[in-house]
Length: 397
Ligand SMILES: [Zn+2]
Image: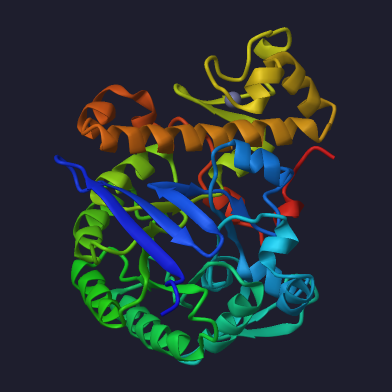
């Protein structure tokens, strides 16, 4: 018997919440859970050298199927080695299915039971994404964890539509399993949809669990449903997923949301917020995001955040970084992104330590990071996902 493509060690359950401490091992190494994955949209975590990503404590990163299939194309990535070689990231990688970007960004022509037809934002050509095609692309890219192609509907659509999206998501998950050509070294995760409808979520989870996949994700949250609704969905969805498999909450989010989800029993996260905010000169601190362009920092000799051990805070003053943003120097967005990713990774390691020592409830009560939400961080994640090509965002040039 070969080693499985993914091994999940559940090291500890928290006594007073649903939180878990664990470790996931893939063919490209291990990562500790709860884990945060920086997002590498176009085959790169924007502006950051892989060594510096690793130095933030990141152990796994995420790649976007949607962007890579359109440019340079998955065959080119495969010919150049695979996505690990392409990104010069030897550690674990997860790719999404492309579904979320198609549903949220693309100019969609048609959604059917077979898949989605949309217009490429690069050359206007018509592109089809189906469960089979998503697997073909993700098999070629070669990430350690790949995602089933799902339908992520607008949460404001009526219940019948949510039901139809769940039916499609379940049918497509089965088609993904059949089309998956590298089950020996890539682990396919299923995605629980169902909006904010408990019965739909439970039905979707129960049917996916029958497929005995190596991990499960919760999708369709942080799309405008609000914190209380997200909390409720997590509280009833996370505990019904298999205890011995990793659970991944897709695209979330604010520190507050991550802490809440960890407490509900979620193990993996990704979000563009640290890098997207960093490029826009917003830096995370315990008190909330600060705007590095503010005039009050012109002669500020302090680091972005006192006590932070990241490369930016160890080497640069707020005054210098502010200048870089105004001068259009690349180093401004780079340093702010490095700090923000490290901010997230420090939060994750502190959460892991709190679970390990049985003090998560106390940690949540006293640590102000656990409350950072949309009032403290000026831009929601949708602000960064809103354009198909992030490079069209206003950035210093
Ligand atoms: Zn820092």
